[in-house]
Length: 205
Ligand code: URA
Image 1 (tube, rainbow, N blue to C red):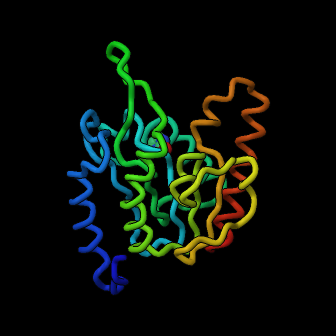
Image 2 (image 1 turned 90 degrees about the vertical axis):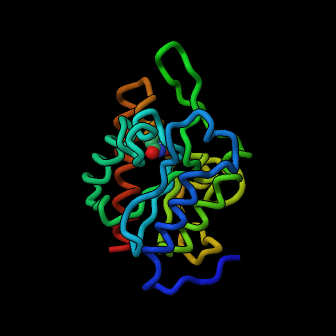
């Protein structure tokens, strides 16, 4: 158990932890990924978002949610009136897991062992930021937040008390919205996502 951090010391401690994460070998994913993609945002953010893992573009840029899913996330946040710059944004797993198909690198979901191995870093981030509210985007993030597998449809829509003292929320991953083939359904689900983000944002306003 890490001792509680004095608020004044948070930035250097965070920077040191991030440096350590850059050379993480807790699971094999570091072998093929370009770099560790650590979380980013204000260290006193009241709101912390957890994604699944960096995608192709995040792996290259070294920043979370900058690719297509990130663009959808940004638009949804804007529509919901939530300022991304005021939130801490991170991922359950900090290395890109993929399968090579010619020149393309195709996303592969992290497994339970990889999520568990990386949960150590997420725990450090949560301890440092001490957000009031944590939002898990999708099943991998929910597993990382709760330490067990849950179904999105069943855990969505109600606050879940977390060990850290924060209020946990589970919702869909933006990639899920990108993948929905039916346009009408996509619009409906997207509106629901925006609505959830709006309600979540209001709780920390
Ligand atoms: N999907 C995620 O879950 N996280 C990212 O950073 C990018 C895409």
